[in-house]
Length: 158
Image 1 (tube, rainbow, N blue to C red):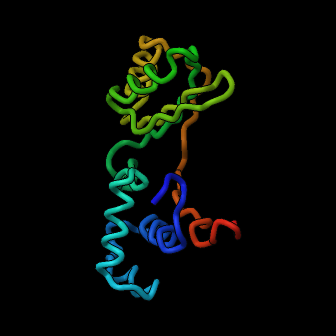
Image 2 (cartoon, rainbow, N blue to C red; image 1 turned 90 degrees about the vertical axis):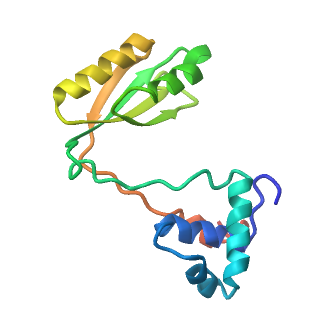
């Protein structure tokens, strides 16, 4: 498997895993693709080893877990320090995701959770202390994750 070159079977496997990685067995995927379960398991192992599958993550309802405030904090980082600052932000308690943006001043997005506004203020202060300039804060009502439909199409069909 070369970088960026997935065949239709691998793309379909990724699609089905994105739907529910924990609740979907190799056998179920194999049945949908008319393959053996061992073939699907081998392909999943290769996708993991190549780094295409980086992990399996929980979809958590933070509100039900006792963290009713889910916020996106948009920051500006100096370009030469962006990578370092984004990685450092991941270590702050309450940070659930960090995205580096390649263009513009708003180049680091930090998702956070908190029990109350004091939690969010602390996180903002810690981000500021790192050297990230906070540009905007948005309280998120809900977030929906879905599988990428393009994995069902061949590379020429997308």
